[in-house]
Structure formats: C-alpha cells, structure tokens
Length: 100
Image 1 (tube, rainbow, N blue to C red):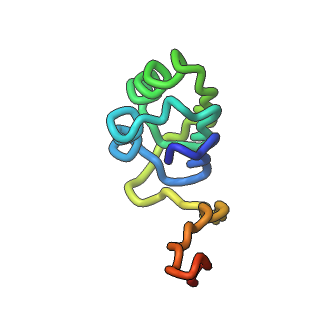
Image 2 (cartoon, rainbow, N blue to C red; image 1 turned 135 degrees about the vertical axis):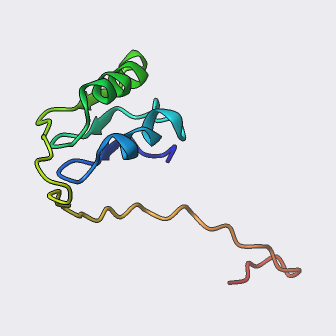
C-alpha cells in the first residue's frame, strides 16, 4: 500500500461498513488522491473519511452519494491495476557470478 499514489474505489458497493476500514486500517495518508465517487456512505461516514484524510493533503472524491433503495441493489465495477514488480536480488555464487 505504501507505494500507491492514488486509490480508486469508485463505482462500487462501498458502504459504511467497508469505509470504516479506510481511516482505521493501514494509514492512507500517503496517498495523493482517493476516489470514492458513486458510493453508498452515510453522511457521518463521509465526514469521518474527510476528517481522516484531508488534513494530510489527500484529495478525496466523495461525490455522487447514492441512497440504497432496497437491500441488494448495489452493483460493482471491477478494474485491474498492474504494478511493476520490485527488482529481485539474486544471491551471489561462490565463483562471483549470480545464480538464477
């Protein structure tokens, strides 16, 4: 998580229970941006997320607050983000060459 500059959790089924993990879990204050637009957060949770992240300079998009009409009416949009793998250090062999 520490290498992420922005995190997009928009267009999904994020509600109060899931959002509670954001400010109380692993710190996200290193992010430049957190995109939560089109969410199902209550007013109190929107305020809690903003109070946790905005003082650290994290731009949060909490627009498009949705109201759940019936239980189970949420939908999820899934995207895949590929990050480069960190360089792998190979151990040195006794002859001074590296082994694979």
